[in-house]
Length: 317
Image 1 (spheres, rainbow, N blue to C red):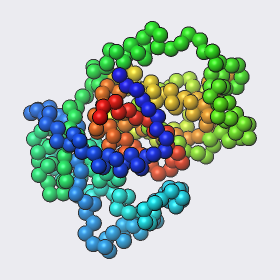
Image 2 (image 1 turned 60 degrees about the vertical axis):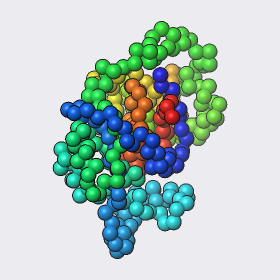
Image 3 (image 1 turned 30 degrees about the vertical axis):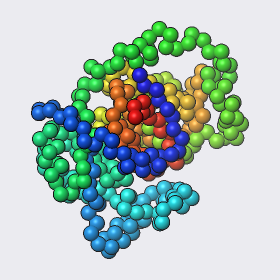
Image 4 (image 1 turned 90 degrees about the horizontal axis):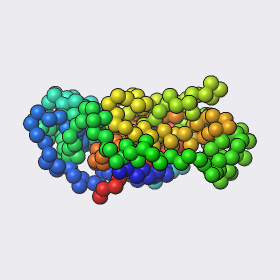
């Protein structure tokens, strides 16, 4: 069902693509009494004068993570290091949406919007708000997603033949099963020089992470997770939960393992001393546009990361 494609560092381009894509923003699949996840985009950031804009820029310059600003100095193509896309979403706009009875879930300053959990009646009220530009990407909310697992996908990931019985590329030694890939990239020589990810923060955006797996709990080098956010469930637990469908965490766990695993002689990742920020913007049950907006919100989450390792899937136009 789901073929995940690992992306390299194209995060901000992705954000721009989402802003321009309103293909399903007028979906008409609402019914009375049913709750829906939907995206609400605001008209502006509520900045009315140039003086207010300058004040906000000055505030951000003083409070923005200095490492993030240094990275922007080397990569930025727009004028200045900060602009209105970095301004927070107007708090009064969030209050107006909440007053309809809808639940504000995910907030994105880059997209100047929020995802909400709301009924049809509440969505109509939100559309009528003066501060709202549009409401769309409406998707039927599933509280217990484990009841909607795809049998074909379940068979693919845990059924007979899902994993090979042996690994031809396996070789004994410190890296174990990851020896081939580590040596292909010559990372063993980097490791030998002491570069194992220490003091580096890596953000991984994927389907979820089985952090209790023994690859991440070695007594000598357990994984260091700084922060985590499950945007699908809207909580701060990226580990398997009872409401998750079968296989939700498989791909994320595998990708994290290539970097963070530490089981000498069995499986060792390429940066096992790094610290991690983990986000889950991907729902493995099906594809829907809200996932893309959650993906952008995940990119915004915390400014301490040095690198992104994002994965997403879009098998529909």
